Image (tube, rainbow, N blue to C red; front, side, top):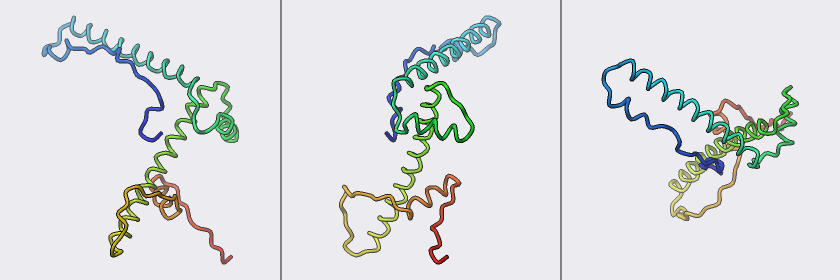
Length: 154
């Protein structure tokens, strides 16, 4: 689901506020009109938020609610609202998706450099990539997570 909005549909109900861009002077009526538009924007934003929270009830994230609840409870957070648990699941899914996407970019760069250095390198566009620690380690380092291989000589 990389690059999608998780099936969330936004409605364009926001006011355009066309009068404020054409007025150069500030009159009390223009100020009152712009204050009214900002109130409508707040209402529109809260409408989007309530729509989003309703859509969370129907959405099934990749991380099951039980797994997310378990780790939240281990961290000392008790969540009774399943929408909140799903919101946290979506945030974790997005975080993992970004890390895996970065690892894929590292893998593509690494294989490209290997093919450039190899005479008669493969030019196939439909390659399958395997997630390796060699690619995952720099991607995790970008997010401040340091991963090292175990020293087996101990």
